[in-house]
Length: 175
Figure 1 (cartoon, rainbow, N blue to C red):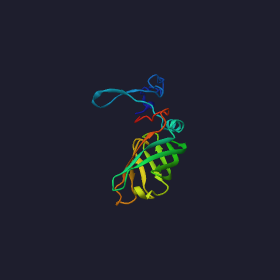
Figure 2: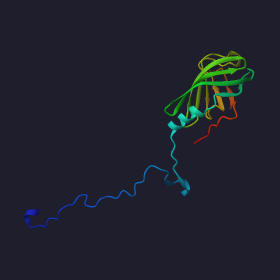
Figure 3: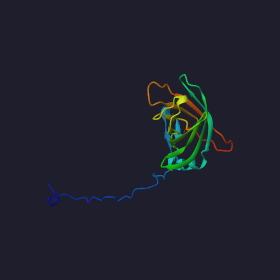
Figure 4: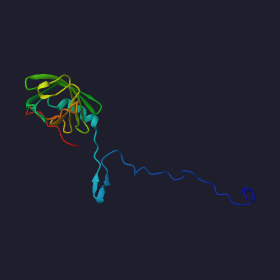
C-alpha cells in the first residue's frame, strides 16, 4: 500500500523546530559531581602559559647540598641558570652546577604542568660518584631531586635546593 492507493500522506518536516543554544555555555569553570556526590568546579589550566611565566619568574640562582647515599661525602651545591626557554609546556634549562669546588655544565627540562625536572650533568664529578650518563630527577621542581646513576653499583643521592634570592617569587606546587 502506498500513497497511490488512497492512504493519506503526512509530509515530514525536518528541522522544523530550531534547537536552542542556551544550554551550551562558553569555556569556563563548570560544576560537576566528584566521587561521593561532592560538588566541585573544573578549573582551567594552561601549562603553555605557565611555562612562559616560569621563564620570566624562575629564580636564576639556587643553593643547597648534595648528599650521596653511598660512602662519598656530602657537598655544598649551587645551581646557576644561564638560559631558560619555553618550549610548549616544557622549560628548557641550561646552566652550571657547582658541587664542592667543581663546576659542571647542566642541561634539563622542567615540566610546567607537573613541576617534574630532569637535569643532566654534562661532565663528571668523581668525588661524589656522579658519572656521565646519570641525571637528577625531581618531582618538586628544583627544590628536591634525586640522583639517578647510570650504573646499578651507584646507590644515588639527594639534591636539596632553595632559591638564593629572597625577592624571587616562589614556584607554586601542584596545580
